[in-house]
Amino acid sequence: MADSISPTQKIIFYDILCKRPLETTSPFTPVTHWSLKYKGLPFERKLIELADVMPLGEKLGFPKTMWPTGAVNTFPVIEDPNTGAKVSDSFDIAEYLDKTYADAARPLLVPQGTRTLQKAFLAAIWADQMPLFRFIVPLLHPKTTAYSSDYYVTSREAMFGDKLENLLPSGQEEVVEWAKVKRMFDNYETWFDEKEHKPYITGDAPVLADFYFAARLYLIRAALGPDSKQWADISSWNGGRWAAYLNNMLKEYPIEPNF
Image 1 (tube, rainbow, N blue to C red):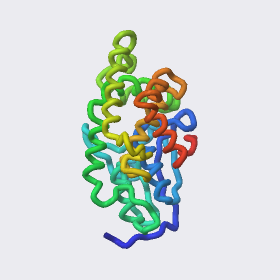
Image 2 (image 1 turned 30 degrees about the vertical axis):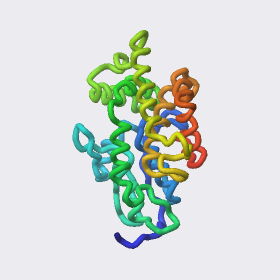
Image 3 (image 1 turned 60 degrees about the vertical axis):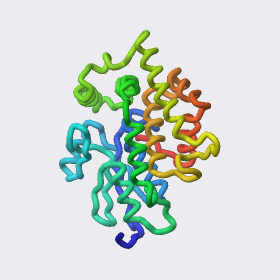
């Protein structure tokens, strides 16, 4: 491992602009936001219109992120003037930060011996997400700016192969699909230690997997709305674990307003 360095310049963190403060349309950019804050690294957050993410990535030569559909320009991306590095993908960014800024005073996002387990955890929480996506993908559309609204619709309809209005369940179908979301969270509950009641996955301090899980909750709350019946449902499930988990994360590591 290369010797650790101390940052003398702010790391540039590229995030996606939303219509209102404290909202997100990405389950991944909050991960990097929290990663930078957790490691105590100075950074500048640049908010970019969703419709401009891909062309900006091409223009500035950002590394592409591998998706199931292939390599694409997407966020988060960091640009580190201290080293000249440009890094995409929230997991790769975390590993870069751990390696580059490895002094003992900075906590690790991926501690030694946890990489495989954290990768497996992330794969597990992203498995079988369609019932949840049917709710949050259409409901995130109003969170986008007017400038990026059309891009959001065309890109998501291409991704899911259907109109946004057809994705969002209603009537009895909504009841059935929401029950599937409940079962998904019930399954998550079995992964957490019920006896120790520690605030994070591995105990008293977060690791990268915690930021991924909290980012999903943050996205879900943004999509459904904090005052919605559906978010109230999630907040009540499993003894109130999920709302408490997110609230604790936001208290410990606040996210700055999105404007």
